[in-house]
Image (cartoon, rainbow, N blue to C red; front, side):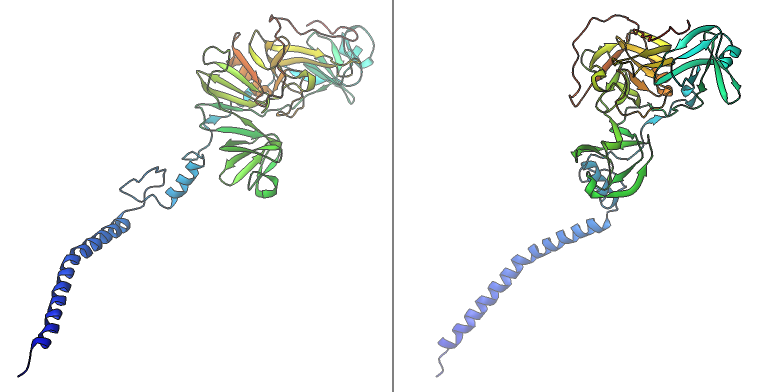
Length: 411
């Protein structure tokens, strides 16, 4: 007789294993299907959604993919660049503002006599009605001119005649008039300069050059190699060695009441104008140098002169004596310190005056016709290097005139 005890045991175990395997398969199958469905939906969503229009997407837009150009824009936005990148909301003022109210002529040589008639001036003898004092820089306002041989003579406002060289050209560069406050700082070059790949000279030049007095936006600024470096595009930097920045700040300055003021930045050598706390104008300037620095502080315009005579000397030997007739569009705000136009050669953006704020004629003209007596003038130095002057009583004093020889003709 055959015994089945040992033969059936493996069969039973095999059946149990088979049942368990089927059970496990049934349980696991829905999970596999769920994973497959989720993967399929994700892939379908990724491949079916279109690319978003180029723009800044701080979060998941949901109905499009913020890839490609949008990734670049988001990265630039995170670096401080606005989107879209656009030019400054500004225009150049009317070019005719640069025309001088009166023509001028430069007087050469030592003390120069002014004669009552042209013939006397040509002969260098006769009735002397005045003199132009000796000095390195001397200009007279002229009514007409005449020539004798290779010599040129001009008739000054008093009617007298003097030998001089008429000025036919003067700076006509102009700043910017704004129709909206820009969202970032900006600036100008003050000389021809290249841009650099990074905020240091070792980074090398980009190959792009900027002309003198060319404007540029400022998106970031760092200090390196002894200069401020302005980031003017995602791949370009310009050093303050040959450039100046306008810091846009619409917050009313200390001691200024209301939203209307003139801002003079001694460190950056720029002037900006605010009306109703919005930037309306900006330009490059040149302020006082050395001991004749322009005084920081908050002042108010107390006198406006469309034409002014400016002369003076600050050295014991009077070797620095200057004499300028018909200085245009002067705004006096701090004793003898004034904002005014210049017609003589100068490079703005560098301290150089005797305390006044120099502007090219077109900018001084614009400011003169915007300003009113009583307007605030906020003069400050963000670097803190310019001394704060000791306050003195304000008034309306005219500039003290120094005549080392004879007096000039009466106006």
